[in-house]
Amino acid sequence: MLTFEHDYTRLPEPLWLACEPSGVRAPKLIAFNEALARKLGASVVPDDETLAQWFSGNEIPSGAKPVALGYAGHQFGNFVPQLGDGRALLLGDVVDAEGKRFDVQLKGSGRTPFSRGGDGRSPLGPVLREYLVSEFMAAVGVPTTRALAAVASGERVARQMPEPGAVFTRVASSHVRVGTFQFAARHGEETTRALADYVIARHYPEAREQDDPYLALLECVTRRQAELVARWMSLGFIHGVMNTDNTSISGETIDYGPCAFMEQFDPRKVFSSIDEGGRYAFNNQPAVAQWNLARFAETLLPLMNVQGEEGVELAVEVIRGFEAHFDKTRQALRIAKLGLAEDAGDTADTLMDALETLMHQGRMDMTATFDALTHYAEGFDDIRREALLALTDQPEAFDAWLEQWRAAPLLNDATRFDAMRLANPVVIPRNHRVKEVIDSAMEDDFAPFHTLLSVVSAPFDESVEARRLAAPATDSQAVLRTFCGT
Ligand code: AMP
Ligand code: MG
Image (cartoon, rainbow, N blue to C red; front, side, top):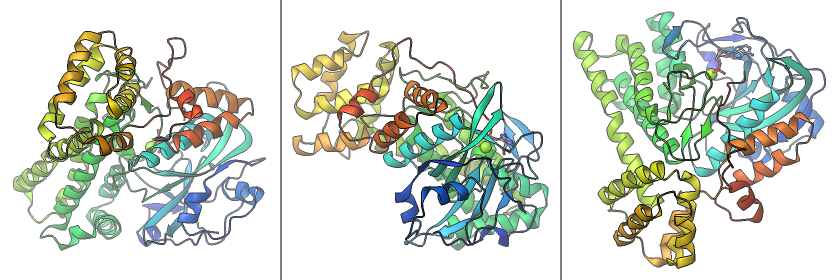
């Protein structure tokens, strides 16, 4: 079905190690992303049974050569020299019709040489969560790994309680992480150089043309990370576990563990049960991304043209540039979310800063606010204004803000609604809805999962189903804590 190549295995071991999947007892296909498979060059898609065999690791599809990738990482600030794919196997990479290369990886397919104490397995819940959230991210245009398949294993995995197991198939521009560089650095300068040259060729060929390609690589990755985090935050997304091993060099969102979308706007919001100090709180995400980039820079220093203090200063300067890239992307997103004219950047920042304060103080649901604002922007009628004011505890202050916004340089009547619609999804994968579909799936009912998947895969579409699933959680439905669930 897919034509596998093995680009990454040109690099030296132990950046990768060959390893076979363990197989599962009774694989059953939950979901297969046929549109993505076709984009990756599949012309024929086999029956569900064959797909279940392949994407559980029970059978190796023709041309695949499974390998586990090595990486290290700072987890919550503490360096762990050897992490690696403890429960994932790269089947190979495929080149799409546009010539772009993508990794295809099984997750939950059994133990590997990097498993340490782990069982190499994934419970069903996190598999479904990653499927839903990554496909939503792709649909709203946030760089992300994608979901190709989910297969129930027919086995139980031992967690706090025994849970049904599953195998997830992930597609990524590559699986090279900041932690991969940290791992390579421990194996010496030549390994790091091989990895850096590989990454430049695969992701950032423009860096090769620069005086110092490795400093240029740092600059490219810094820009992509800044753009990524700005996009997350425009949707209220909290990654939850921004360790260096979960920071992709290509600038895609990777590793959907305890991630969540905040509902009521709160800059300090944390969901993850393991993030006790709030290291990865909503508003801390830009600072943490920079911290992770500094760890990346440390691995590149020995390769750079300028060594010593001066080299460090050059790298620090590049990482400081994160802020300008972040501000620029955030401003463009703010212009779009508020339906402003293209050159109204300063106004967008002033208005959005004020709106964020109002959303926080008025306990407003972020997604519902921008959705209702989009509808109000269609014709500024009173009914829709009332609907907006009903979202806040402080209607007077918000009404005053609405006046300011209407006085700003808005796009004209013909284009405003459509522009705002594309910047403000009707629906996001709300935490209580994700939990609900996982609970049903545990009882072997996958219909709610498929409904939610189809809705979040078309997040700008208005439909009865989308409206139902778009509603914020009531107090009793609200999810207060998320768990890594590994
Ligand atoms: P994560 O929290 O998913 O980013 O994983 C952190 C590290 O732990 C990675 O090296 C994973 O491969 C490894 N890991 C997580 N869960 C398991 C598991 N069930 N078995 C083996 N390794 C695991
Ligand atoms: Mg990870």
